[in-house]
Length: 133
Image (cartoon, rainbow, N blue to C red; front, side, top):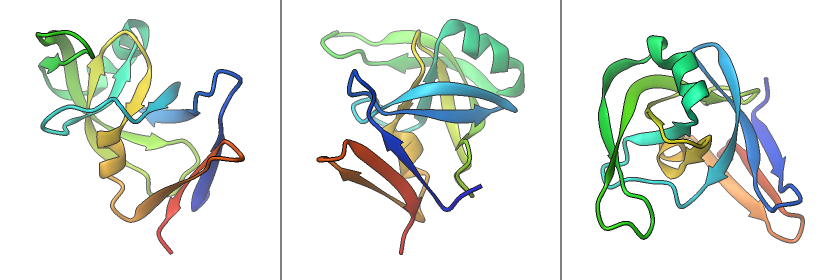
């Protein structure tokens, strides 16, 4: 485990990281635009990934997501679980996980990392997530 991780942008300029939930690992895209008004949803998973962890989630319910450009929300299955960034010490965040068709780590997950900071080196296309100094 480490006190910080550095994530490099891929050829598509995506920042991808491995997260763990319910003792399973998933590659996700960090999406700073993925949020919701109450900041409860921190992780979206594709259907197969969501089904793999659903039995380990609690407080199951249909959540509302607000897709960009859509006037009305869509309802998706969801539950609460502990999510962490693989290899990053003390990055466990209790957050709502939704079945949303894509593997995305959103802003609300990062809000749960109160003792951390995120910095980008834009010239190097590198994002570093680590403990505050």
